[in-house]
Length: 318
Image 1 (tube, one colour):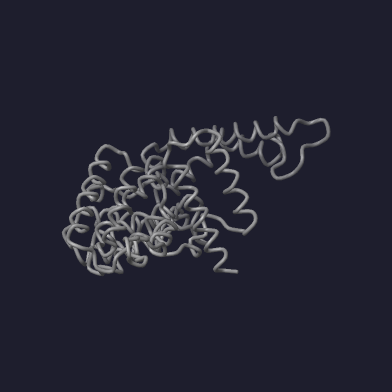
Image 2: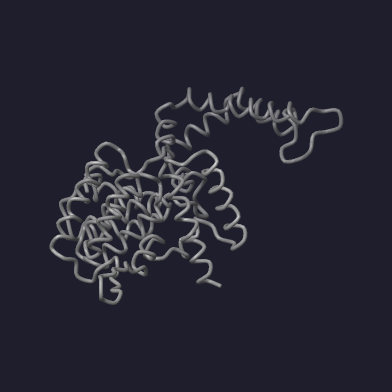
């Protein structure tokens, strides 16, 4: 059943790529969306399940398995594979031209066209790690991070010392929230290219995101509660606030049920909406007191949960 699911996954991935390529009528787009939903339901497949991904896209599998038939007068049919084991000199030159076309499309943010050019280059010369790595960059720009991961794997398989493939793999994995794996690939990229500032920056971000993973001593959003409670500034502010008559009045009201019972249903005749509104109001007032007491510390806390994303910078250049 796993192989069947992998095939279904590849078909669904192909249909998603067709949707993102543009040029389809609204009816055609709607039909593809319905087809995707039906396949996902029938086979129990989700695009988020990357364990089902294969190393080649469906068009590549088709191209490698489909022969071109040539018929010459007085001779039998000759079948030639679309993906040659050893590309001719002309094919190598044409593949380079297609790669350059793809690079030009990347510069003007035409990522779907770039994917098409890189794919054609790969068909002519499937032994170039650069073509797969470039297409991975285009896939990432389109949000197809699973496709980017597959292409980076292929590029690394062809050239294990290609630092850019490891860097782009790190970007794709980070975008899939697989920060631990991203750290591994960024480290390998830096091992091969120690002076690359982008890899250094992205590695630090990935490592920070790994540390921010909630733990028994960590709070939501990656806040380290253990570190927070050991912060003298925070504890001093909390102590001062708890001795503030206004804060004591707020807490007393909450404990006595003035703002409605927390975690229970509203009493008969009472409005649950009003209870929640009162609780929110109390929380807002408490937050305002904290902001007035120590705005610098509050800003430090906010900085802990600001979303940060890895940089592509020079990774955009195929």
